[in-house]
Amino acid sequence: MLWGLDEYFFFHYNGYGARRPCASAPTNWVIHEKGNTMLELRDISFEVSGEKAQKEIIRNVNLKIEENRFVVITGPNGGGKSTLAKLIAGIEKPTSGKIFLDGEDITEKSITERARLGISFAFQQPVRFKGIQVLDLIRMAAGKQMSAAEACRYLSEVGLCAKDYINREVNASLSGGELKRIEIATVLARGTKLSVFDEPEAGIDLWSFQNLIQVFERMQEKTKDGSILIISHQERILNIADEIVVIAEGQIAQQGSREEILPKLLGTASAVTVCSRFYQGGEGQC
Amino acid sequence: MLDEIQKRILEEVADLHTVPSGAYNIRANGKMEARNTTANIDIISKEDGSGIDIHVKPGTKNESLHIPVVLSQSGLKETVYNDFYIGEDCDVFIVAGCGIDNCGNQDSQHDGIHRFFVGKNSRVKYVEKHYGAGNGQGKRILNPGTEVHLEENSTMEMEMVQIKGVDSTIRDTKAELAAGAKLVVRERLMTHGAQKAVSNYEVALNGQDASADVVSRSVARDQSYQKFDSRITGNAPCSGHTECDAIIMDQARILAIPQLEANDLDAALIHEAAIGKIAGDQIIKLMTLGLTEEEAEEQIVNGFLK
Image (cartoon, rainbow over all chains, first blue to last red; front, side):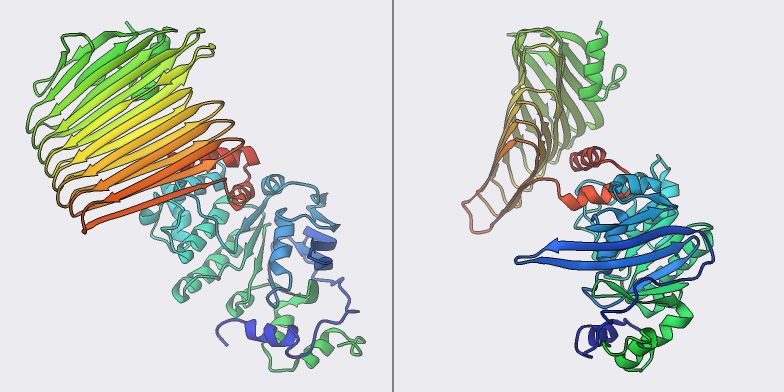
């Protein structure tokens, strides 16, 4: 299976496999205590107002991400992955719960404040700007007047021929894949301790995808105390993760090391088996 | 001698820090302040004192001409007529611009009427910047009128910029193009406070393969008002495009009226107009880079008008 776990999630978490995460499943997952906790989501819930009632997108999520980790959040479409990433970046505010960065409560902090505290966020669908050039955007990301040559390095890093792009406008003349790579370059230019990528592979072609994997691998090597959090469906991204978190229906359905989680996601076992492996004692509702 | 205020205005409208090289005519408070002519570019005052005639010899290449106007005297109102005669096969760069610093209580006004007669196969790049400053009650008013006559296969590229401080502007631009001639207009405008800016363009494409591209990008803030009225008439097999792209902010108002008239079966004419506020996700994106909401807005506006 080269591409995507979409089918897996589609059948196993959207009712087609008729199996959902247990309602009684524990949401407090203990993960590897190898470093200091950098980011902590404590009992986070997020609701939106529907036509008739409140809809819960994220339900009582507890998650800790340590320093120097490469964590991939995966799960079915509509499960709340992107919302979780937005809650971390401050784009959405939780209905209840707390978010901590290096022990500091950042729940009420704005997007700007969080960015300055060291959170970067790469959008799933990068934003276009008429008139703003790629160089301007990279300089804004870096927060300094870096030379064009320096900015070019970040573009080369994401596989773009820098001289062809540095003076281009970040507008509709760029393809989705090009924009996506520029978006990733802005996160590289920021070089913060926590980098969150929302589906970085979406809209990227096969050749670039291989390049993208290398970008993340290099980031991983370079970052000493920083952590990378990626929302992804891609097996090859999951393959380089230290940890994998599966989010479905707004809750953490599975969480653990890659060695532990990945075989279960890729295996041929039925949803029931997967479920029973994770929710010991909760089989009645699985 | 120019005083400090006048020098600052000069810098804003013509990017001039010192006396320019090439031909120039600097007008300050209704009088000629300095002038230089070259072997190929001659500047002559009109006999009635209403302006200047500029003659560029045929074949003049890579020469520049600066004709900035500076007003720092409150209550001064003037209308100036400048005529540009560009010979055939020329390639020249013309910088015009007007800056008003009005610290007094009377209105200051400069109406510059420019007429261009561009010879065959010539190429003109024209930059016109408007700038207003000063904290007096008197208004800063600029009403430029531009007339462009392009002969066969000539090209004129016009960059019109008015970013700050002008209270009221009515800009009238008319152009007629012969066969193979090309007109490119890039207008950038920002209004704030209670300012009012009107831009009218009338372009007639009279010859085969004539082409025009008239694009305006503008930002209207506070309670300001803008009107962009651009009309392209195709009287021959030709191509024309006009576009107005505007960002609206606060309680501003914008009226965009792109108009096309085709009088020939092979006249290919297009217009586009878009008015909208700054997209929320643009601000959010820049905030994730560490900018505040205000800084993000400023960067978006600056980029848009760049």
